Length: 351
Ligand SMILES: Cc1cc2ncn([C@H]3O[C@H](COP(=O)(O)O)[C@@H](O)[C@H]3O)c2cc1C
Ligand SMILES: O=C(O)c1cccnc1
Image (tube, rainbow, N blue to C red):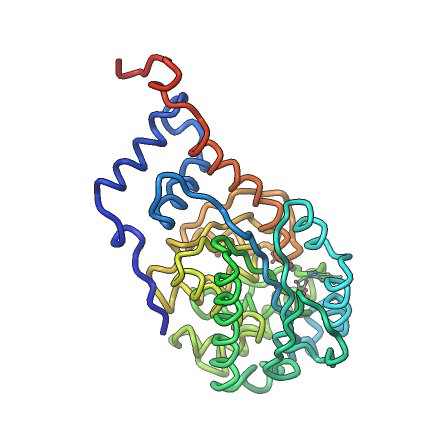
């Protein structure tokens, strides 16, 4: 479906050695810039250059509604999805502040909100809903096969357009009341974990509602026999239109050798699906933060992901991506601008 080659298979061993040497010969003890060194190595490898740069950094927010909200699994009413889309378009959400702060291009995609946005014209708004929200997966499959495939294709198309505009680093956010229930159900199915291990407080539900959420998940896994199902089936039965678009977007970005910045719990559930669809996908990712959503830590561990930040954030919208972005810029700054031992006349430990 997506042609994603392992980055190390695209370059020579000489290039890999030269990139590592460039990092190691900077005027610092080896490894002392920690995760920034891994980021610099990864971006150099993806861009196949010793002098990588970021162009047209972008965050795309996919928004959609979830039928499972009917089960009472969120603290907020479904209409908040529509209201937050309007807030994004007016520039008033957290992601607006942070993306503006760091000059990150922000696009908002209506993937399937239960609302009519036909009257809205804005350069940063892509109004292409697949359908007006998913079915309640406690009763019916969230999407049809066709809807799921269309959402994946649409997500890929959005990324293609950003790439054509010059973008080589992209993160994804989401908005969709009840989508932590979908994300947790995906995690439960693909990692064979119980509903309780995957369900968390989302927008701030009580412990009792978390138990209800876990029950809704366990019953759905049972109903659709998802413990042995493939990732696409899981996505279609219990996922969301915005999560499916994120899956397509993430896979397309990796196919185009862009760096994929992963936000919190919901974006990570999309990354999990993408990693099951393509074994090389995760090599194109940087996880930006560990969300306070309780299951995120376990989800990250399962993908062997080391996030850049742990700020106790639990918002979504791509907010973790935008907040972490300056650290990624720092990684390239040291690689491109720092002096080597030789340049600066500083004695290397090996001399
Ligand atoms: C005002 C508001 C702004 C948000 N921005 C992101 N989310 C986040 O919360 C939702 C998921 O939590 P749950 O599964 O508990 O509904 C998603 O829309 C997510 O992006 C928000 C939620 C609210 C209420
Ligand atoms: O980590 C996230 O993405 C998250 C957590 C809670 C609510 N919304 C999003």
